[in-house]
Length: 134
Image (tube, rainbow, N blue to C red; front, top):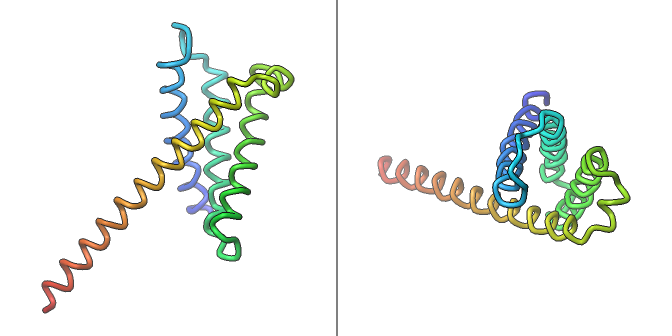
């Protein structure tokens, strides 16, 4: 179980760090990377990674897991944003909501493409195995 949690945390770090860097490149004024913000992004990303374990719970349909994950991710993101910007400023900022939705959808698409490619590789390996055994 701990191994599984760590795996999800590390995946969360990867996605979160990537998104953080993209946001700095495209949406930030030229500045240095703030260690506190970086730590907040890592903690937030790790928590979202752990939250992603909800997709492994078989009693939830994919849609229910996705809705719960979306809400949980929003709560974690709002919590992190309130630490740096203040909750009041974030809640009423249309840019935050547009950015959050865009990033959530983009990451979801990247994960789906990644999963599709992994399934294709596994299927190719199975096909090669069956070809050799014939």
